Amino acid sequence: MVKRLSLVVVLGLLLVLTVTTVQAQSAGRSYLITAQGNSLPANLEAQVRAAGGVLTRTYPQLGIAVASSSNPNFTRSIRGVRSVVPNVIVQWVDPTREVRYAFDGEFGNPPTSGDDDTRFDLQWGHDAVNAPEAWNAGVRGAGVRVAVLDTGFDTDHPDLAPNINFALSASFVPGEGLTYALPDPFSHGSHTAGTIAAADNGRGTIGVAPEAELVLVKVLRDSGSGAFDWVISGIVHAANVDADVINMSLGAVLVRSGFLDDNGTPNPADDVFVTAREVAELVNAVNRATTYAYQMGTTVIASAGNEAIDFDHSANVIHIPSGGPHVLSISATTPIGWAVDPANAFLDYPTSYTNFGQSGIDFAAPGGDVLYPGNENCTIAGLTRPCWVFDLVFSTGSNLNPALASYYWSGGTSMAAPHVSGIAALIISENGGSMHPAQVEAALRARADDLGKPGNDDFYGAGRVSSGY
Picture (spheres, rainbow, N blue to C red):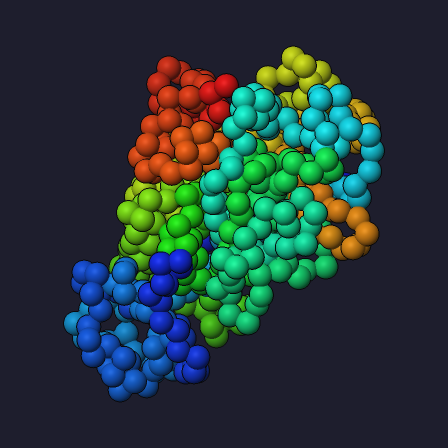
């Protein structure tokens, strides 16, 4: 494998789910319709039909609807609303550009740490956030529901299946089920879910909160692309099924002045220029969803992004959802050569790719990197690999061979956010299984390790998260 750093590059419900879906679809482009407030016009469906479109979904609690139409004047045909903008498809995660290193198969002796999950000793991130100390105190995430909004998932992975609530899990990607279907083990959704709550089952890996319940919500294609309304649907669904935490290891960088979007296809005829006003309305729509989740009592956690952007000096860019209201934005940390001396390695260097800036980062967490300069081999937990590989985050993958459980190493803020979601689950569990998001954030701040300069810091925010044990 060529050693290189690859970054995610982007352009950038059971309370009854009051989302109405119409099965019939009108050919043409999809649009987001946003009300002036939280109430959509009573005659909206009739207006959409008269304009040659079909109303495909409504979110009454947000004042947002989705429609499709081939009428080029559709955006100017709907009255009594705040905006009608293209429901563009963007790349929220780019799996082909993350640092990855595969390991297929579950084997080996239990680790020397005392835990009986065979690959636990590869999970340096758990040590960084003091997860084992919480487990030893009896705090393991029981009674907490975490919704993972991502690509597809390996739903029969032995480390994931015991903790999945299949009744509440859902896919909002049209025509695609919940299960990851690409022919490789690099399942982004499986990796993030495993870091949060892989079961303590005596094999493979273990999650930061190994007794938390997982609600898996597919909002992106397995390739990482997705429409804005898919992500919004996932947020509303998670809030309405009473998720305590939402993890979104996904993000889009939007240019305030506008950008050219290919609408998810290689056909230039489908390209659309998203204007500055449309960018603002797309951001507003996502912000309405995250605010709704917060109001429903759900702590929302999102990766800060992997473009090495200084949010304090990049006024023309917006990162969503991490930059939205009531969303905790997570940067990434890494060791450099951890496998050379695991007992003494510093685990909290800022990664080379993480976005940063006091205006955009709330907390830091283990994300992994390949900054170690050498190519010599190291051996950890019975596995021999180049030493730099072990600085990445090890978690669950997709089972190509049903007889084996697949895992892989990866690096990114996508890997950092799940560590925070796991710690949040431990904190909520410790407090009886229910906490207001503001209380969760306050507890995270009180327990975080203050790294960098005292107080809020460009790379660490309020600090690298910790269980506090």
